[in-house]
Image 1 (cartoon, rainbow, N blue to C red):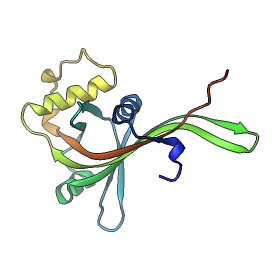
Image 2 (cartoon, rainbow, N blue to C red; image 1 turned 90 degrees about the horizontal axis):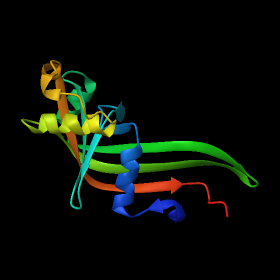
Image 3 (cartoon, rainbow, N blue to C red; image 1 turned 90 degrees about the vertical axis):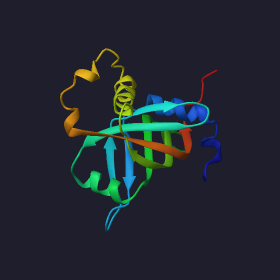
Amino acid sequence: MLRKDREISNRQDIIEILKKCNTLRIGFQGEEYPYVVPVSFGIKADENQCVLYFHGAQKGLKTDLIKKHKNICFESDIFYHIDKLPYGITARYESVIGIGEIQKVQGNEIIEGLKAICGHYGITDFDIDQCNNLTFTDVYKVIVKSMTGKRNLPKMQS
């Protein structure tokens, strides 16, 4: 990372940024070009592992690429604002970039993954077990292999 002063090295700080993000962008290895998809997501993390859940249709380019390549990259960010400074302009943000392995979720973990997604957006009272759209939905998880964080927050006024 070029700007070491903006690097976030603490894993828990990186996870906290992910928890504040609205969208996860997943990069797949496409046939001719990379393919990036924005998804709603949920996060489950402990001291040993971070897993990101998302869902999607059972057909389409994303599904086809998942079947071909298990290794993906991801990005998520929070854009706060732009500051005009005496020496230029700077964006105020926090971001996370990582790599991982994608797996289709099976069995009871489908509900667990969907609950993680709903919980990420503050929905805790939805009865996923009663949802009739699950027959048309696949749930996936990204097992995070590594991730880095970066931020440029406003300096505190004294």
